[in-house]
Image (cartoon, rainbow, N blue to C red; front, side, top):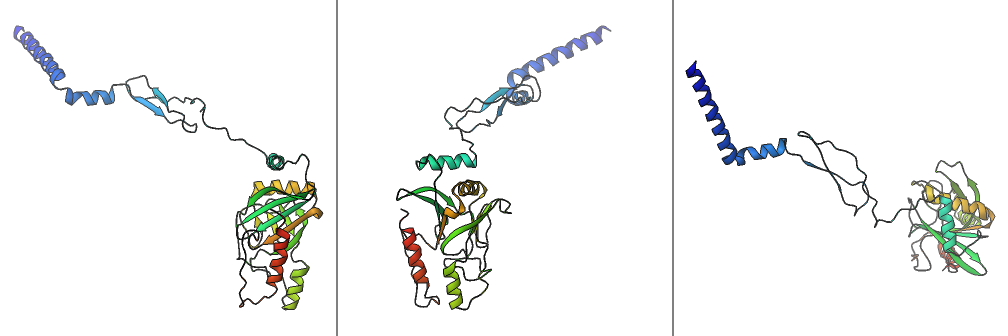
Length: 273
């Protein structure tokens, strides 16, 4: 019995001595595992606010896995807040920028095919005032007039607005008065029929010969058109901005009346500068 007790003491002494030596001289072996499994870790939750807001730091409490707790970052003092305006409010801002207190009495819409933008103008006391620009959100066809149904061309000429459609499948739409008298006269000379129609300025981002400007922009323009009245709206559709560039009509062109058409369009546009 005495020998068994002595063996137990010897075993305990050797175990304690070995553990002490391992603790002192074996840190390179055991310390990485201790840090990984037993030491508290730092958890970084990405900041959901715009930069330069700093990340939010949290440290878990406990010997095992970290517990992530949601923490809202402080508001960024540098980032500007984005205003959320309705289409009507955006329109009012355009009008205010153009020094309008009340709605204008007339509108001129200039659609530039090469530049792919719809300009909005008005005339007040013999002065032409620019209100807004609405970029095309899609485009079809090429530069040049519309000749027939299905050619995917945006017309070129001087037009008006025949009616407004609040139930359009392209959000909202404004129907252009194509074909006009000039289109019909030239088609008759060239014995062309089925000129097409239903050319719209509308929302969405698709087109097969119309002018789409997106849902938010058509809301602005549609509201303004209602206030002005469609009888007081002129639409100029041009291949290029004739105030800045020209179109070279070659001798090979089969439509000699293009020069006359473009001269008329240019004359109409030159006042809007």
